[in-house]
Length: 154
Image (cartoon, rainbow, N blue to C red; front, side, top):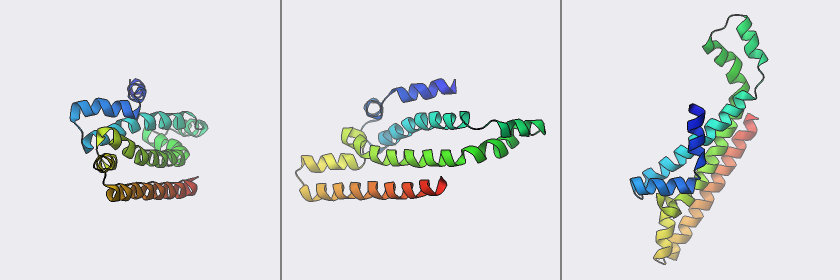
């Protein structure tokens, strides 16, 4: 059942999900957070499940042979094998989410994208330039930090 829910969540692209949620919650930051959060849950769930499915099963068999309970199998058999993958996937998804936040704001889900559209509509080029600069700096900073952290994990 959990896998089916994740598939249903992933069916909708973020833009479509944002438009659906804007209709229900209005044009505000909550809509953007829900859109990014729901889509991330679907994608992270799929990628985490794949990481766990592709791990080596022999440590679990060894733990089973010595009578380990379920929590011990998770702690000593699963987590050590998938921790780096899960951390890397999570950082990558965070990087994607920062970029998506701007796009979602442009389609009406709040945030910097909404401010960007408002400044453009009012022909306020100073504010528009400042917002664009803030977006570029933020994306580059997040990209740099997540790349650095991923290199330390792998």
